[in-house]
Length: 250
Image 1 (tube, rainbow, N blue to C red):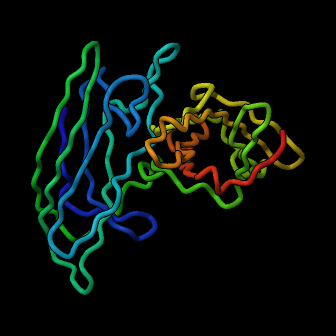
Image 2 (cartoon, rainbow, N blue to C red; image 1 turned 30 degrees about the vertical axis):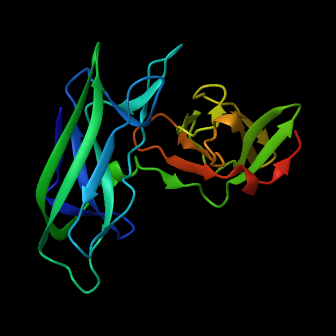
Image 3 (cartoon, helix red, strand yellow; image 1 turned 45 degrees about the horizontal axis):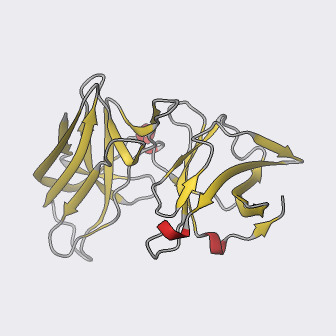
């Protein structure tokens, strides 16, 4: 397993910049997403920047659904990038700057190994365009044309997503849940049936709340909506507070 910081800033399609931490995994081994699933441990990256620089939450790409049946995991094989959004000090764009990265991971095959790396790299401040193919693997915000509602009848709860039939044509639709204390998604990762209603499509994602496990923080409806199975198919970030989502009848 190899972990490295790429030597130059990467420019995203929206004009923002990121430090790229690249993981290269040995054949037949795999690593894990932020929610590893039924076993494993999350991949974590922390970046320390010079004074005046600011960094955002590291972004992980769309995970693969690994395994099936009684055990399901979410992670990566071969190689993947963690993008750390960064902003240079106002009025200053140095030719290069020092980045220190702490990375922790678990890698598994027929056995598992934990690993960590402390890296220091001089990164060029002259950003280069990030791969337009790879950037499609990173979650987008849920589009405004997707309408979210809660179903709450006969003790069951579900997140109902309604969207124009032509807006998300890729199939199948799957959902990879994030780990949230006090909330559990029901029905695995799918694929979930999509019901046609006129010119709209409706997707129902059932869940169960356990307030006693919520650790004093209202649980959020959080995870990734995967559209299609092909490389480059879109992935959307779902992150909603149930109290902010309107109710609907079944």
